[in-house]
Image (tube, rainbow, N blue to C red; front, side):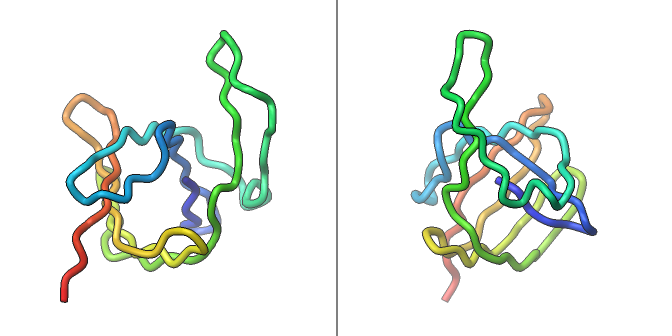
Length: 105
């Protein structure tokens, strides 16, 4: 997952895919920030024994930031496949989780 913020792509690897069920949380591994030139970057190399992972663009669109801090972000995604509110937050042990938020009427 890449979110453009102040000219930089903040990035997370979401190995099990984006959650669609609001009762489930998924691991979101914070990875290094990238330049905007990485916006369309994909690496089709398969996963190997050394932990290298495939990078692919699964969805594209825009987002609205509701909150943006060092330890948590709430965004509304407007993608081709995903549309809804998501929270990405850092846990006490330094990991990150992502979950789909329940839509408010």
